[in-house]
Length: 401
View 1 (spheres, one colour):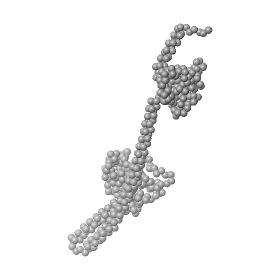
View 2: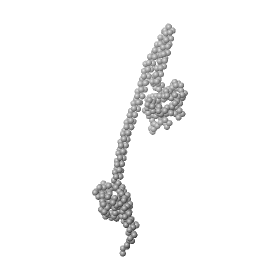
View 3: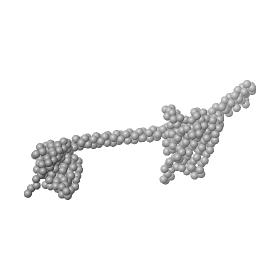
View 4: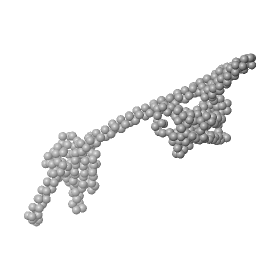
């Protein structure tokens, strides 16, 4: 004997079913249900239209065979591998967005779908599937990916161009440094040649002339002529002194005959005496210090000379402190004055060739040159020049340079 559903319960069931149908019809996502055989038991209009069917044309059909039969690459998609069917076969829900579904006209679209088992108490009776066409999103992702790849390509290309340009700049700078070093060498050689010629030619002429004036004086009877020869001898002595000064400016002989340390000490004393500045010169040369080569000795002397010249010309100082230290590894020169101090604008000025020249001289020998304001006022200059390289030596200057 079959049970009879009371009229109020039937009415409530119909009202609930109507509300559910309205809800399914209102959503933009595709929604369908399948039984344990994979046959469609319901589908909303949005889902059917997305697949290119009418809802009534889908009911009762196997949904895998209808819309999920082929992989994106065109190969067959076995139903036993279908994640949708795992929902009711193994009770596992799934959510995927890297797959395609197929329309009635044989075209496919990228879809995001979810599959959940339908349970009646502890028994699985089927699955409910929701799906949405994400082709636009995939196209946008593809466009974004292509744009990103294009940007990466352009960045890599630009980076290569900049790297090549920087390498070329570095090579050009290295060539300019070598040219500058060569010019400095040529300049020093020319200075030495001119100094030798002045000493040998003009010096000997002046000495002979003075001897002749002395000889002439001894043979003159008239006092006024004798007085004139004395005056002439004085002028010759002045010329000899000036020639000696010019020779020293061109190439101090002490640098060639007694070496760098004696030349720097002599120049420091000459500088203090000529300028009248208060100051002191200290030198600490370790016993194991190697003798610097001619090129390095000339560079160190010229840097030291230019530092002191800048103090005399620009610092407006009253005192200067000079320290020279050398050991088996490097030569360090530190000079500090109490003048007006150097500014960043002065260092960046296009006409600051002296600073640039000192820096280039130091860099050529693998050294470092630093100049800036002193904490106690005035200007502080520090020079570090490697004298010898040993195995494992990093040739790093001291931390305060």
